[in-house]
Structure formats: structure tokens, C-alpha cells
Amino acid sequence: MPFRSFDSFEFALFFSYRYVIFRLRKAHLLPFVQKERHMASTSDLSPAERQRFIMNWLAEKPNISVSDIVRRFSVSEVTARHDLISLESEGKLRRVRGGAVSLSRSNAISYPEERINVQVEAKETIAATAATLVDDGDVLVIDIGTTGFYFAKALMDKREITIITGDLAIANYASFNLPNASVVLLGGSVRKGHLYLAGALTLDCMSKLHADKAFVSADGFHPDHGFTVEHDFSAMIKHMYLTNSNQGYMMVDQGKFNKTSFYQSAQIDDLDGIIVDGDDEGIMTAAIESSRSHPKLYIAK
Image (cartoon, rainbow, N blue to C red; front, side, top):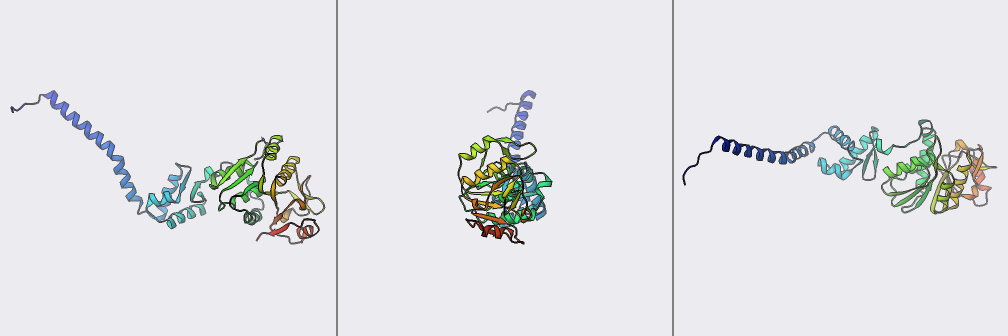
């Protein structure tokens, strides 16, 4: 076969074609090469370096699971959980069942500092005890307010529960941090300056629902006047929470004993249990003993 020489145009066209093919192949393969190199490099990181990667990763997605960390960094589940515990202790994320969420997402709605930081230890202790009364699969009504918020935070290990609430902060927290909970947010108007829904629509919504257990709070308790709150709507909705539930529990710290607010929201005989952080003067114990129904008193430790 006779040899055919290339003219200058064909020669340039041939090498241009080869160059384009080379660039396309390189562009196609490069991400995979880079990924393999990255995976190799992240499998031998120090805990501090690995935790920095976790935080960068969490900044790009709403949550991260333990299994994600195990696959990404080739570490054990114990190591992955330890990383999340360490980051949570530093206030960088919030752990949830099976993983973690970023604080910017889990705390999108919260209470003012002057409310959320009042009697924190008492509320957390009461909440932890109240959570022991919740069974997997329960339908719960959680009252508005910071005590209810701390109670919601104590439900992390409960499975297949349903939470009914008119509190925006509680609904927000549960939706991001309680993966095994369904949330029913009552309708109504947002009360100005507060994070809960109020009005006739809220009452109407609750009137159509029924729960296994209601957990409510109060602004004050006096043996002669029962449990009282500041606003009339709060009294009405708390009463309906209790009426439309099989069991009703009051969560109140002893700093509110012998104090009376404007509207009565419940009497001792309306309750199945009362959860307090203490009863140093025996006020609640005496009130229960003189009642007709004698609800159980839970003193949180």
C-alpha cells in the first residue's frame, strides 16, 4: 500500500482531535481519582482532623449519621459516636438518635435567654422524671412553655411517639431532633412576643384530638386555689389538654408553691400524677393527701 503523507491541515486536525479526546478522558476520570485520594487520606486522620471534616460536612447537609462517618472515614461505630459526643460537648452540634444535626438547624426557633435559662436544673430534672412515664408508641400532649421544651428534649430515646403541641419551639425541636417522633402542631394565631399558638382555632383543633398522656405546667400552685396561670387562654387550653387525654401529669418546680396567678388551669383531682423537683415544706404532699383522687407524687432526683 503506497505511503500517504499528511498535509499541514490534516496533521493539525489529527493532533487537535487527539488532544480533545485526552482532555475529555482526563476530565471524566479526574473526579474519581481525586475522590479515591481523598478517601485514602481521610482514613488516617487524627480525631481533631476528622472532627473538622465532620463539621465541614455537616455545614453542607441537614444531618449526619454514624454510618455516614463510618463509611467516610473507615472508623468503627464507637469511634464515630465518640467524635459526635466530643463535638456536642464543645457546643458544635446536637446529637440525635443515630447521628447528629447542626445547631443552626436544630435551634432555628428557641426561647429568649431570660426565659430558657430560668430554673434550668429544676426543669431538666423534672423533665427527665416525666420522660420515664412515657412509653414507646404514646400519643402525647406537651404544654407550651420552657418546662415542656425541656420535657421534649428528654424524649430522645422514645420510639414511635406522637407529639401534639401548640408551642412552635417544641414543634421545631422535635421535628429536627426526635427522628422517631411525629409532630402535630395545633392551629391558631401566634401570640405576639411569644412562641405559641392561641385562640379559638387552637381550642377547636385540640377538641378533635385525643392523647394517651398530657404533660402540662403552671405559673403557680396554692392548696386553696389549685394550679394557676397568667392568661385565660392558657387556662382553657391546659384544661382541654387534660380532658382529652387518658392520663394527665403536672410538671411544676417547688419555687412556684404557695403562689397564685390569675386563672385556675387545674385542680389536684384533675391529675394522675404531679412531678416536682422537691417538696421541702411538704406543701404538695399535704395537698395530695387531702384530695379525693390522691394522684401520685413524683419527686425528681
